[in-house]
Amino acid sequence: MDVRRRQTKTPQSVKIATGEPPMKPHNHPLPKASDVLPLPLYLINGLFFTMFFSVMYFLLTRWREKIRNSTPLHVVTLSELAALVSLLASIIYLIGFFGVDFVQSVIYRANEDAWDVEEEENEKFIIEEDSRMGASPATTLGCAVPVVPIVPAQPTKVPVTENPAPIITPQSSEEDEQIVNSVVEGKTPSYSLESKLGDCKRAASIRREALQRITGKSLEGLPLECFDYESILGQCCEMPVGYVQIPVGIAGPLLLNGTKYMVPMATTEGCLVASTNRGCKAIYASGGAICTLLKDGMTRAPAVRFGTAKRAAELKFYLENPLNHETLSVIFNKSSRFARLQGIQCAMAGKNLYIRFTCSTGDAMGMNMVSKGVQNVLDYLENDFPDMDVIGISGNFCSDKKPAAVNWIEGRGKSVVCEAIIKEEIVTKVLKTNVAALVELNMLKNLTGSAIAGALGGFNAHASNIVSAVYIATGQDPAQNIESSHCITMMEAVNDGKDLHISVTMPSIEVGTVGGGTQLASQSACLNLLGVKGASKELAGANARLLATIVAGSVLAGELSLMSAIAAGQLVKSHMKYNRSSKDVTKISS
Ligand code: ADP
Image 1 (tube, rainbow, N blue to C red):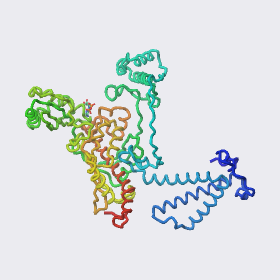
Image 2: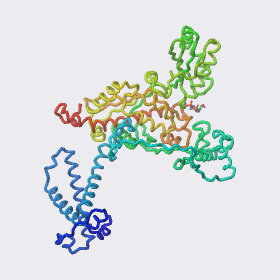
Image 3: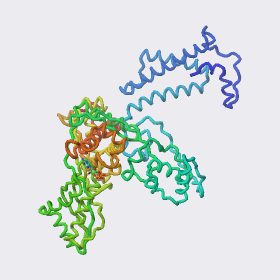
Image 4: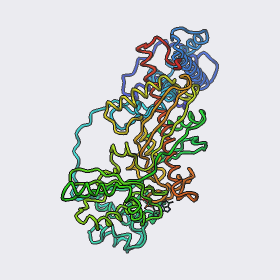
């Protein structure tokens, strides 16, 4: 703060500058400390400012402690009394020198800063399931964000630009300029640039320029450079014009099945990584989590139709007959070294038959692989069932990227259960709550609340937050977060009610470590960090299965932390408010 600069203005001149009428000068102004003390003015100002801030800090710290310990604020100690007197003295001096408005604003800022710290500590770990809807940022994200009143949006007229002004960036060569113009005029299809030019980066650059000129909208801010456009060709994204940057945070170490993992999470949701990290800390301090793989099989279900329901049923009986399994497996498996048919489950709707094939897919997530196998079988069936009409290779009984009970009940991809016993002192010290509050919250929120809401696989606090962040970081298909986030979180008091047993059961984690986005440089680096990059050298599928357990372990950490934040922030308070058993619930252990 530049105190000397302020010396040049009297309080009166400040008021004039703000347009307020000047105050009449006092005939006999009160003597100021600066008049009395034989010190330079800036030293005296500095002295009073230091006194003001240190006393203010001391008092706020004391008040915070009192609030925590439920000590009445009006009970003051001698040191607090002395501090109050010093504060009063410094305020009187500062008002005399700088005016009331300035001192008010300083006090407001000092208060704000001090309470921000408090808010952060208490609410840092609360991350709401749906932070983009409704509630204020402060409550949803759990960060100390100032609450801004919501002003109803005024209807605005969106200007309709008939011919937007072209944004023209000079091209590096005359040839490129001609190609841009050709795309703008519609003579060269944008999608054909890669194959025509044989240079993916150049194609993206030309497409981007043409897009800007056509729309009249700038893409400044969307980076183009420093990306390997060859790596996405024909696999990850068509017609690229740049790439979106998402920050990657690290939670961990996550101690899972005796191994430590540093978990990369790509997210723009503040506090998510910090919260998961706190959960990891609690798990680590309690001896780690154990994850068990229950099933590993990707599914695809074509829809076929017959002239009669009887014929459809005949195919159902044929496909589900164990005697035919070997023949069908040979046909299904022939298109891949890794796809191995596990089973076929049929569902009928009149004359229509939905055939759900399940197969293992090695380290690939497996959608391509399973689809190829299904096509082999459909081709084969045409011999014995020539009246079969294939409606589509996917008839939604699979079920991919949609909430569906079949995945929740039967599983899809990797089905896992992950558990940990969190010790009582860790629940208290790290998670700042208690076992009884957590168990009750889980029952009322994740089980009962979700039942009331008619949830399908949503018996958890925010599994999808963690699943999505890990999926984006590791190159998984983020749309599969829908079924991959199916999760039931269970909590129980164990060891005579002292410790917490927590588990997450997730039947449909769809992940791979080869194929799709996993081979891109950034995503591949994140997989490498977890030690699951690419195909497993020891056992086909081991990397993908390990990744699924890490996802579940991270979800366990996320559940633990958010549930604790809610229990500490709301449930404990409501216990106190309604005085359920006239006991301090923070001390209840069972
Ligand atoms: P998806 O089936 O998940 O869509 P892709 O078809 O894109 O995946 O990628 C799987 C490809 O990777 C297949 O061609 C497969 O032969 C190859 N591959 C190499 N090693 C493995 C492995 N360990 N597990 C699964 N697939 C593998």
